[in-house]
Image 1: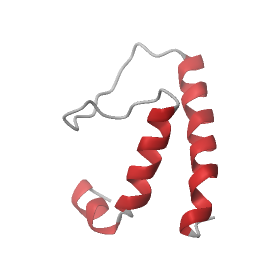
Image 2: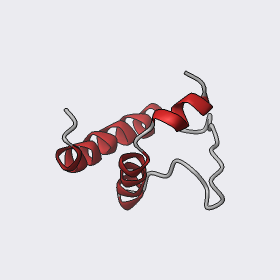
Image 3: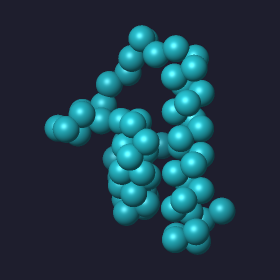
Image 4: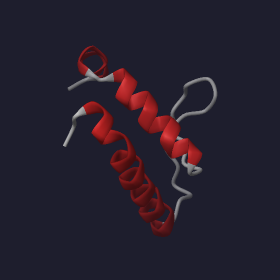
Length: 68
């Protein structure tokens, strides 16, 4: 799936709530202008923490959207 197809099929409300939820826990996916960056400076602990936060946020919001 390329980006254009993703934009057509994505649940943008769910995605925006996920990103905002992660930001509440200190995880950012984009800068303020919407740009996304890849970093090689993160440690494996940073990656684990990010995944744990993503799990928490998904748990907080999935019930609102009927997603399993």
